[in-house]
Length: 286
Ligand SMILES: Cc1cc2nc3c(=O)[nH]c(=O)nc-3n(C[C@H](O)[C@H](O)[C@H](O)COP(=O)(O)OP(=O)(O)OC[C@H]3O[C@@H](n4cnc5c(N)ncnc54)[C@H](O)[C@@H]3O)c2cc1C
Image (cartoon, rainbow, N blue to C red; front, side):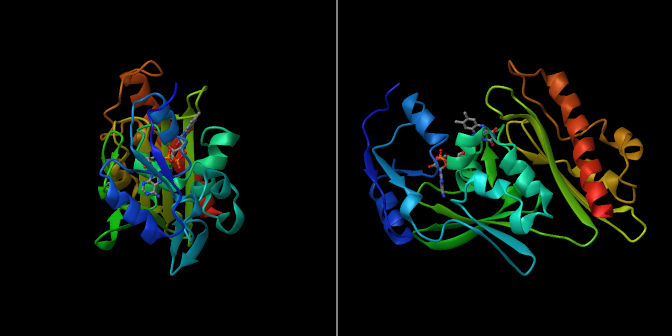
């Protein structure tokens, strides 16, 4: 289909992008365009001004400062799928590498994915599990949004219409720590029917000291499995011990669609939580 008419602007600075956003209340930012362009073409979204972030400098790349990983919002999934300097933080390259196909990973960005807040998107689970923060810049300056407050509804997130997400910050515990992301892919699109990100830190005896488990694809909004996280403390991270603990994830309130029923999704949440925790626990122990 053909989208309704819109103007296109390619600002060369963040300041210029913010000015353009301020000009029209229905202006939209373009990241990789992997969600927005199909939505415009299907006329599920409309805009009179598309503001392309592609030429705004300093929005791409990965760095690490004082135990926090910093990822530019326009960094593509493909760039993050390469283990590189973050090879030991498996959850990042496992999440990025599990998204869609090569074309989608080459164009789509971590920032666009988080702001779009698709209930079946992969990044939201890892962002929550790694205690992420989103840095947004708007007309009133910069503010930081914790992951727990970022997803506000189905396809809804906290950044306002006139704010640009510039940076995604993630925690990077390495000592006796391991992470993993696993999912059941919808075979055509690759989106998560259920996806689980897990981070596990062990104590000196090899028992779980801290666990973070975050789930996407199940509920309309991604969530941390807080009750499960509490049960895991003090346990050894092997499948036999963890299987009964993962059998029920209290926060799961699964959606019902043509890909999976409520009961099947609820079952998958437990299965994939177990797989993610066992993989993260084995990495923490190695
Ligand atoms: C065939 C196909 C398969 C896919 N499979 C998967 C999959 O398996 N898993 C998965 O997670 N995703 C999947 N996706 C979605 C993909 O990951 C997109 O990259 C992502 O949803 C949106 O990122 P984007 O950079 O393309 O954003 P865009 O489409 O450009 O924008 C999406 C929204 O975010 C806003 N936005 C973008 N960047 C910013 C910013 N920096 N600050 C503020 N707002 C911003 C836009 O205004 C828009 O509202 C798939 C998409 C397609 C087309």
